[in-house]
Amino acid sequence: MTQGPLIALQGLTKVYGKGEVAVNALREVNLEVQPGEFAAIMGPSGSGKSTLMNILGCLDRPTSGAYVLDGEDVSRFSKDKLAVVRNRKIGFVFQSYNLLPRMTAAKNVALPLLYNGHPHQGDADFQARAIATLESVGLHDRAHHRPNELSGGQQQRVAIARALINHPSIILADEPTGNLDTKSSEEILQLLGQLHDEGVTIVMVTHEPDIAEYAQRVILLRDGQIASDKQNGKRRLP
Image 1 (cartoon, rainbow, N blue to C red):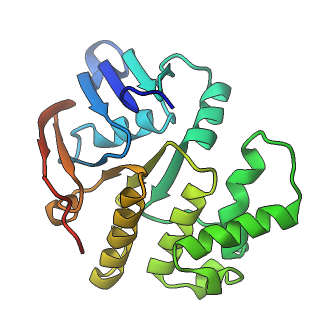
Image 2 (tube, rainbow, N blue to C red):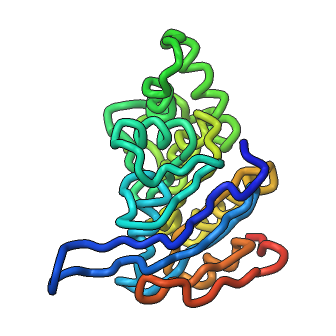
């Protein structure tokens, strides 16, 4: 890993469409995220936060500007090369969990191992790693349950375990508590906090100010630009 910022955005601009129908989703965004930070991105609908998250996750490319991830400018990478970066360096946590319903928790967690480009280690090795990762998020006893046998909070823990399995440089969490009740939300935020304490870099999108307070830093987007970027000080605990 580079000694500089984990993420560095330089004049990042994203335009959809052309001419009179062009939409400037992001406008000359400059942003750095240091290794080990826990940052929340907020903004009203249409502010550009989803576009920014897609670019940070290497799911999309900017129209202009640079995106340097872990010392490497990925702005103009091919789709295939971006897919490699996504799998090796980025762990995703989604609001809707995105678990495969017919697979057990352990098999869902092991999925990224199938695409990491390493020599095939065999199902038993993958299963062992998946179960160990589930244990790290408190779900060792649910390894062989399918998603419909788990609560929403447990499903999100499986999703977090899946995000962690390849030891990524960063976790991108998109509304990770959006489908959860208050108690489950607090448990997920506590888990994210524990991961942060262990040195994991986390960028979380949320529209809820009280959820953003759990992060060290809150970045507010408005009209495709950073309207404010403030430090919360010591991270709030659930």
